[in-house]
Length: 135
Image 1 (tube, rainbow, N blue to C red):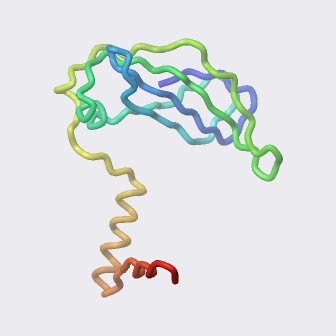
Image 2: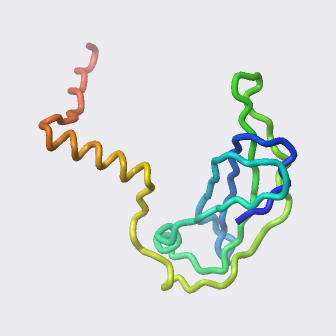
Image 3: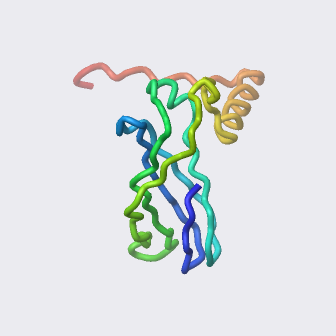
């Protein structure tokens, strides 16, 4: 989680990079959502399988925290936040305590459900044929 002081309420995107104990980059986390004015905390989750796949040892360090507020209908359409200069070290976690399962978001699950419903009704999604060279 990252603590932020929000001056202007709105829809924000916050990004951060994660590094392992050896300083290797191992992942990226994002938050998108509405934030009201005041002191706010946003979740920045790094899924366990990412750490397993990287054979990454913790504790992990969050760096390069950055973000912007969307300004719908305006130009420019984003107002950048001041980048966070520091870093945050996670508490100790054993890699064996973190999931090895692939992550499916609620959106991913919904899309799979829609595709399965289409298949049950006989609707398929076929890839278009590749065009012949020079055509």
